[in-house]
Length: 99
Image (cartoon, rainbow, N blue to C red; front, side):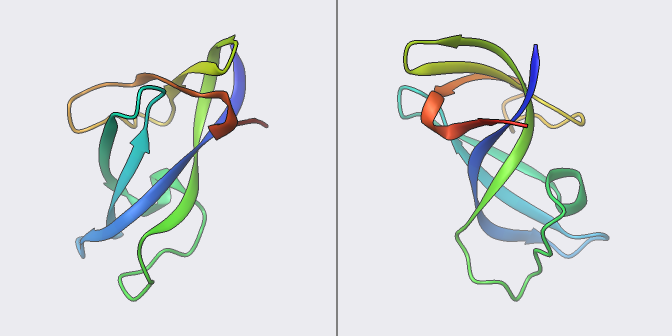
């Protein structure tokens, strides 16, 4: 496994509860939208606030488990999972960068 990051989009400010929660969309390699609702500092060091203009791009920490022709299977880090409980997702390799 290799450390990396996957492209995602913060869609909206989800909750003002400390330290602030954001809803994120992560699109997999077949175009399915996976939603994540998580505390901002768990997802990014970007200064995302309720007053930001959404959507906005951000990169989520992942472990790159597998690289194939055009796809990458990644595991979300820091306890992050989708609202459906998934932590491992196959995305297009263009949406992954190695860190």
